Amino acid sequence: MNTRKRPNNLWLGRWGFILAATGSAVGLGNIWKFPYMTGEYGGGAFVLVYLLCIFAVGVPVMMIEIAFGRRGRGSPIDAIRRLARESGRSAGWSLLGWMAMICGFMILSFYVVVAGWSFSYLWKTLSGGLSGASVEDMAAIFEANNANPWALGAWSTLVTVITMLIVGLGVQKGIEKNVSWMMPGMVIMLGIMIGYAMFSGGFSEGVAFLFSFEIGKLTSEGLLAALGHAFFTLSLASGAILTYGSYLSDNSSIARTTLTVAFSDTVVALMAGLAIFPVIFANGLDPSAGPGLLFMSLPLAFQSMPFGTVFETIFFVMLSMAALTSSISMIEATVAWLNESKGISRAKAAWGSGILLWLISTLAMLSFNIGADWTLASKNVFDWLDFLTSRFLMPLGGLGMTLMAGFVLRNEILKSELALPTVGYVLWLYMVRYVSPLGIVLIFIDSLGLMDL
Ligand code: PFF
Ligand code: NA
Image (tube, rainbow, N blue to C red; front, side):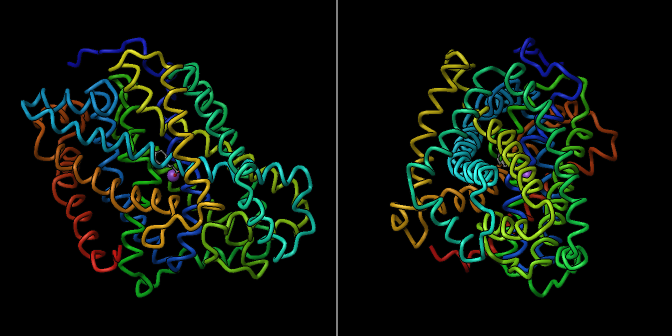
């Protein structure tokens, strides 16, 4: 079997990996991005394709990543290099690890800005800054919140600092310890929100919007968006899951943990949709409001509802915690790499990468105020970070990993790592060799026409 390179750096609890990986997966992607994308791309049709992508691409790729991490016992770069060598292949495959690490870093640099919105809206709710606001007021509040670079920057800086503090404390004392209370807390709060939504009066309309499939509504753009979002929401091809997998004990089942994480993530996204759209419809608001949906429409809706402030508080606490359990996972690959390959202490690695992150996230933050017209092809820095990662880096990284797992590595390596019954293994191999890569390539080709850069 595998010689364990880091025996004292494994998850402590039986649930350590599941909690951390689910914490990574469940985040702004589920609660902020999924609802507004569903709104923009037309509801049920988008949801259906998204679910297909999760199943046909996301699940097989997540299994690959966990297996790569556990077998290679290291950061994405080192783990993939080790695996390639073990199969007598070029160490150049570790480029995939580089891509993933950089992708996670890029995502985090705009993610902290959105997480900062969540923190600032929690603050606004508690300090009464949203009460009595009309539709126009809400838009003005959202704009004012973005217009001041100092205030907006302070919130994203706060998120960066908390993230780095947790990650700097280490895998067990920092990450595992904090996800162990944040994740259960988050799920309870989400349950409360749904119960509330059920009585808001818009529930059936919300359900119909999410689940009525009109396939004709789906565009090529929507297809690519659904694929990119499947990667994003499961934290794939960004180093997070692979690195967390490198701390997984040899006797855990990779298939079972993957299904648990993917299922929980999907349930939370649908639950978030069920918590948000009924409130939107009950108040006659527009579901296709875009990235501001969560921050303009939702608080507005809360205002007009009984106990709105209480539930709004719960909502933004939940959103902030979901964001943190994801943000810590995005930088873990970088910190693990600096720590393991460069011998830098975790705390120093966290602060060092935190400073670089802060610089790039500041550029993303400025996209909402003084940098609004620093654009290229009518996309600002924030848009580019989102676009490049979701539409290119993640699908390409995922494609690379399926090819590596399906055709490059010696078959026994992943076979022993996955330890599946024969039928399961053959099915997985078929998905990884044909279904997932073809799916990615076809969606890419289909969308080539509309990538007017
Ligand atoms: N999966 C997270 C979400 O849905 O919010 C986002 C994410 C986390 C993406 C970690 C990438 C990553 F490495
Ligand atoms: Na997610």
